[in-house]
Image 1: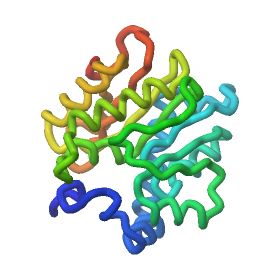
Image 2: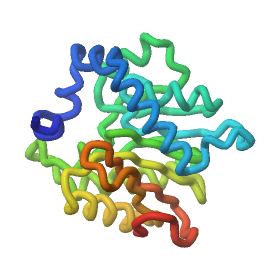
Image 3: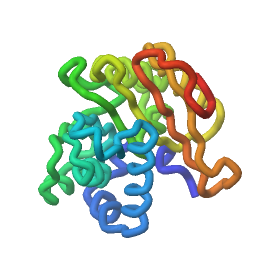
Length: 215
């Protein structure tokens, strides 16, 4: 089956029908929750003694990850390109602030405001030239430049994504480095072709080596 990223742009792919189907699918909901919990674990936002944190959810979709953030008592802002997905989130009375925007064009939020960032199953969309005006390298750089500005000094991000090949992993990693991030690539279930999951875990300050493939 062809990857969704090769079929359409995210704004076109996640139309009203797909947005409703995505959110009602119990299997997808379960996977999304597991991926979000793993992101929180990797940057220690699952620590109940930490207290509420301001978290940026990039590619927030219909708010499935946001529900997990709310359960952990974190305050969050979600950004997504798909209006139908955001409308589903609004219909669920989600507790986060929702913003529509193309992550590949960068995003304007209050500089240095967020303690952390998570992103689930969204970053790989920026690696595709799905429109004539889309240059993957430029779009990835705008993404990481905006993220660096959005985080407080010492802020961390856990970004789960589905790379198509090693070239995409290298391009994404290089864009993060170019924009001042340090960190590493974590791979869960590395020996399983179906269960393998990639997480880019980064910080806007150099904190030494992290476990995994170091950037």
